Length: 446
Ligand SMILES: [Zn+2]
Image: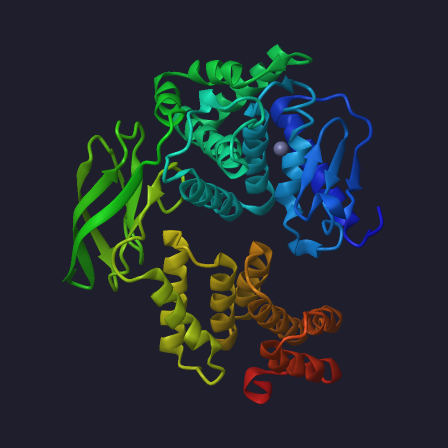
């Protein structure tokens, strides 16, 4: 391994995943476990896991805590010690199981928000890649995608498979699914298995799981769209319309949660036909209707009704990025808008939303809450250098205010370590200044 800056963080994640899967799926005989960096030819982001080792593509050992490998990528490869090595596979079902194991581990290691992000990314990637032809039937996938476009293979083997297991976990109970997978593991140790055997184990969990399998193993991309009108009503609004299922015959065998995107009570809606009446009451401004805000159902969705989420995002971030903006009402409204986008699962950078919320809280003097949002924004991994620089700078300021000078200096140096770019100069200038003289308060130092 030529770069060892991050080997500790990667090894720790691998160790944690190993312990977690041992409890879930039973022990695998393994006394040593190695992480190996692959030569550059394999390309960044590539990986492979098998018997007691994980191979990671170039860059994995340098990328730091924001590395795409932490902790999900590592967990996926570690999971192949069970699904791939303890049980051998003749087809893609090992990827389905490794990705579902990753989902469980992410929730354990990073919280429900991280699991939601993985489900959301899975649904969106599948919706984008599987259409417009609608993809292929799972039973028609040969081996590990022989003869199939790699992108189309991936969204079926990994994303669609993982979501089917997640939906079955919701329908049958995660514990029942866990027991079925542990039994599947025991019954197939040292043997070769595939989708046929996994499918049988899942279908044995009852009628609801069997219906989910039947609905989703076929090709096609069911799509949900909200149509209707919101009217002001008291301090909030009431929405009346319908939920339209397109390209979705037959209907969905499990209910979908629908909620006012800006906050308010959601409800579970059974999708039994192409058009389902929908009535909702929301609080505050109408921010549209969020379909399945927790991303639990494998269904494509058109942007929620109401305002375009990109527009809402741009307006809120404009206030965040205006250094002179200190009006508490405007900051509160911007935070509410960003939180609404997060709750609605809008197609915007979650990390940037979190950092935006953190910067508003910082300006309002709520430093503890601000630090939490900024840290989570960085951990989300999808915010660009501009927003990361602000998060790091403000975390440094918060550390200074808490008299943690060492922690503060570390953050300021991280700002200076970001790439050379014009839109980072302002933040770097501040970081340099605060390295010389600790930050003492917003009014004084900006
Ligand atoms: Zn894999």
